[in-house]
Length: 196
Image (tube, rainbow, N blue to C red; front, side):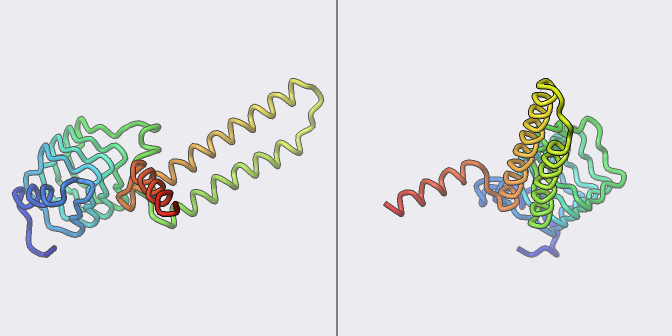
């Protein structure tokens, strides 16, 4: 796709239709400056480095969209759903962010995308945290049964948090490949049938 030529709303709608799904829409580095994209479903679309200066994204669905390094300066994002959106290094200068839905901590934990480095660092950090918790627990003096129970419960809580965080890392890494949970299920089913 020619990223030098500015796109129109009609171009984006045609590309959405050709892709069959917004999850397959790739507009990395495209010039979308000043165009009206209001109300469009751009969920999970890849807009890395796109020029969206002064674009109208009012009430657009940008859930899980990849907007890293995108220029959104002066864009109208009012009423937009930004749950799980990757805005790493995006320029939001003078953007209208009124009534934006940023999602909540729990939903954002399983939304968005991460690159390989973030995935590896996050996995290393979560597993290190669990090892530190085990070391701390193993060196605590336990004089009563109640202290032992409290220690085990605290260790289990740390383990649950580490497991949930690890699952969120895997899900967000799959999102970076435009794959979701249904892909994992299909892939394992296909492998099972090919080995029969």
